[in-house]
Image (tube, rainbow, N blue to C red; front, side, top):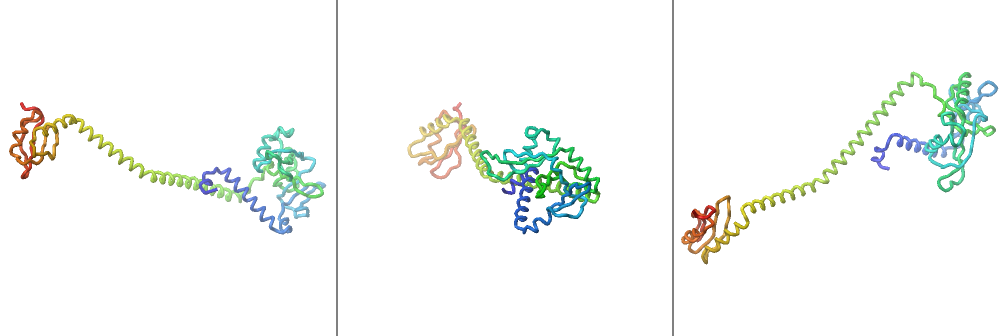
Length: 325
């Protein structure tokens, strides 16, 4: 995945990827540690015993603490094992939340639940074996009140198997956390502000990259646009020339050329014939330029023939187009 894909990603998907990466990385680190270090920092679990509280960490007695995970009595937890599509943990929980009223006699808002993917081969279609544990929210509220009356604020609820002491399900998401203390509020506000600034910076960076890509695309097309513009100018110039030629009359120009060819004697040839508005300009070479005015004046296509400056052995005449009066 490249930087552009990350910048174009929504925050929910990005957060899910970061969380999965963090969990995988910490799991690899924990697996590399010796067992005594892996279990030394386990959570403290408090259980109601004979009207008091018993604190344990990894199955051994632990010092009392004001905040700990609370053990839910086994009789308050409903556990079921069945086949279900095995998805990513977050997606699996969302799918079960939508399907809970079909799988259990409860609605989703009535219970807190957790799911475990059991070991075993995955069958065709991504179907695997899962264990679903759920407890009613009203039971959790009663347990929270009982723990609070004994000076312990539960940070979550878990199921602890009797005998082995293994923690199976965590129902922490179903219990409201205590309100943060006033000392934490400034830090929370600062964190929210930093996240907003980071979000704004990501949006600005994404727009900057989009603008840079658009500018590069425009620059890449510029030579093609220049060639098209030049080609259009040439076509328009050729069209204007043809219109001017047509306005002067191609047939009339050919008739003038034919008339000059007929009147010029042998030994004289034309070098230039041009029509400028209603004026005719002739220039060429002849052995006897002095006899040409009388010959050219015989034409019925022009009138007012007048000599123009010319060198030795050359002739040049100007005339007005139109038959002589």
